[in-house]
Length: 635
Image (cartoon, rainbow, N blue to C red; front, top):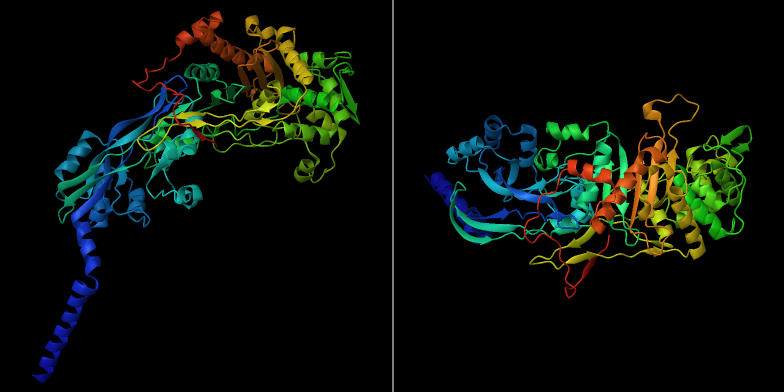
């Protein structure tokens, strides 16, 4: 009996101690847990801001969608919940398991497991809400790219933030968490903080099974800021059709040389961002997404800023500018023999245009004389060439507000040592071929137009950009792009010589003389033919030269150029044959819109066949008030 009494006493002491821990020592902790079980905070996702073109055409918006979500806090049997969703709603088992095991995701945050739930899915969930209160249907915003592939590389796409991204300071330090939907490319990524808005919240009283009993509070979400871009829908649409209608690939950029605003940016092939938007919870396992990601043509790659190409003769504009500024040639003494090419050692570098005699700098540019520029390059030397093209921004990133820009390759002794250790010494041959944009020259289209737009603008180099304005919300003020150009002092005489020569390429029987640019536009430009493989090798379609053309308008007038366009048509042959006609159409469309009348008859017919924009919703057209406080955005 005594032993039994001691046992009972010990039990009471243990119970008493446990009661003390529960009710005194850890009272506040368990009180908070009980409160959390009774009151639940459910986030309400904020719609992302819309993306518009410069004239108010809505390019990207949101639409409500019924999505299936799971509340991890209410999952009583994880395996049973997984089996239920897999067997009845077709949810991917691995993805769901990974999501439920994500220790970094807040338990109160709903896990998106299926988008665009069918009526049958919603009916099943409603019929089984007592058995599975953790599975619910939520009305959530879904991203919609209104014109599919149009401007996809500029606009970007969205996706669930990855564990690797959460380690980056830009996400880690800004409160991003596992499960968040973020921009994964283009404007969506670069301006994600502006677009994402602020989530709302519902505070509910729930019973022991997680079922709502009453709503205590509801805080409405605040939509992200709408972004007005510099893009022009009509120019963008036309530019893309000029490639796709002929099943051609390449890139095109149209911009304003006076401020760097991009009117159109095309990279072909392209992709439909809606595929990612409707498969945001399954970006690796959905068939449509895999088809884009694994496409050997790399449609996600933005050739306008990421692909690097030999520039061909478009490079000669920079060579001529540098030579004039250094005094290697002068306005009164610029004649150099062509000779139909040049002999260097045991190799003869020919001039593709034949023998031009002894042209001056104007004629050499107009007729794209290779022999002239071989010899000019040798007079300058590689170090001078490298120094000057670096001043024009070559071999550097332009700073465009789009991700993953590449900087390209420019001629230098160090480059050859690095890439060709068997023959590391720079030779005259290397200088000669670099002087016509081959060999050690390979740059992205954005770098080329940035450099030559700066030259024809008199030495003022504006950063190319697609952001124009972010509209105000309850929390945020209006934001504008803050243009901060870099300046390089160029002689007005040099600029006039280059301006006149580029005008002559189009209007004085030069290499683009047969393209029939409308004379009233005063277009100037430069053709370029970039060699893909050595000329002596067998040529098939995929080995044809790349076709370049860069053009500005108006030129050789008292007016400043308003639009510059660079186009590269991959394996398109001569610069004047494939790319110059595209530039002509874009510039004609620009001035047709400005003047309110068609410039080219063929443009009228082409526009009639193209898709027209949907009307923008009321209030979508951008408005700039002079008295509104300006908050610049600088990338």
